[in-house]
Amino acid sequence: MSLEPAATDRGMWRVVASRDFWVRLHDKGFVISTAITLTVLTVFILIRAYGGGPDSFTLGVVGNDELGRRVAALGDRSGLDVTVVRLDDEGAADRALRDGEVDGVVLGDVDQGTASLRVLRDPPDLLDQLVQGAAIGLRLDTVLDEADVPEATIEELNDRHPVTTSRIERPDPDRDAKAAVAFAIVLIMYGQLFGYGVWVATGVIEEKSSRVVEILLSAIRARQLMAGKILGIGALGLLQLLLIAAFAVTLANVTGAIDLPADSLSAAAITLGWFILGFAFYASTFAVAGALVSRMEELQNAIVPINLLVFASFFLSISAVQDPDSTMAVVASLLPISSALAMPVRMVLGAATPWEIALSLAIIIGCTVLLIPLAGRVYAGAILRTGSKVRIRDAWRAAE
Image 1 (cartoon, helix red, strand yellow):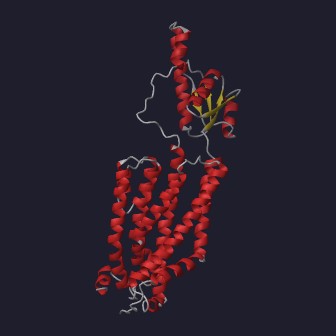
Image 2: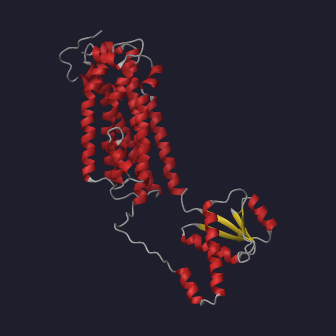
Image 3: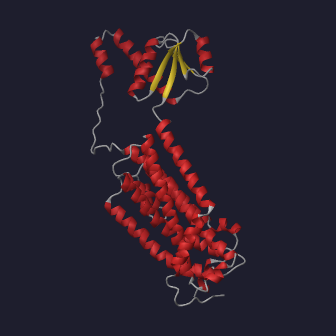
């Protein structure tokens, strides 16, 4: 079954794009998705602003004042906050542990080998390491003192930093802030690519199941119908991304959660640009998935392969936040299925070289240019076929 549109349909994609943009803009799904995204971002930013800080512990001591002092000093040098509380006896220690007043209590004598760290259940790893390190240092000092080593030498051994650190490259002072921005980019981009891709697919099914598509195809070719739908929904996704970025930057500045680097505007521009490229790559496949089925209940199975690709890209990009120079991160930033998520992360972190960026752009743009006409043909061959799920091979042949 085919309907021949008029020969003057060349600009009709603009009408379709405008219609999908405004219809979806007033859809409650747009409002809900925006609210959810802003809520998640708000929680993330507020945790960064008010829930962070160094790890802190409260250590009880029973007759181990010197060991407690050393644990606190060692924690301070390690960037940890350790509060030492003196307790009278083991009974008081047990009560403090059960009441949650302390994280652990040091009992016994280090020099006599009877010292122990008492905890309610499992000891916190960092606290256990601090206590063990302080106890080792205390025992070494005792041995050195018994061997009549001068006190000045003992103090020198305790205070000096025997291994110095040398750097080939100067560390980036904005590294933590950039990592936080990169993590937020991954979360937002994943939600945008997946959410708006599904909107493209559901829009196709709605028109197909209601048979509105038959009326539309009497005035516009199938490929232009697909292009208009993708552009209209993609423009809405870009608008939402702009709103989210503006909200996140404003809230981060107000709360001081992230000391945004000077090039934060370029990071936002990078995110928007790669969203456009990623959406252009994936949207046509979502449109095809919607055209292959006739009912909304069948959509989930139809988009499983696309979901897996986007989901895998998400995890690859999360790993790129941790180690943007790893082989996995580099490969993910070059593959067209994952570059829209991984490459902006590496660019924000300053890990992507100019040739990698250029190659990634060439690959995703080239693959998109090749994919769109192929997807358009399958879409044209399947959009008017109702009933059971259409096979890709049959849709391809029907469009001949």
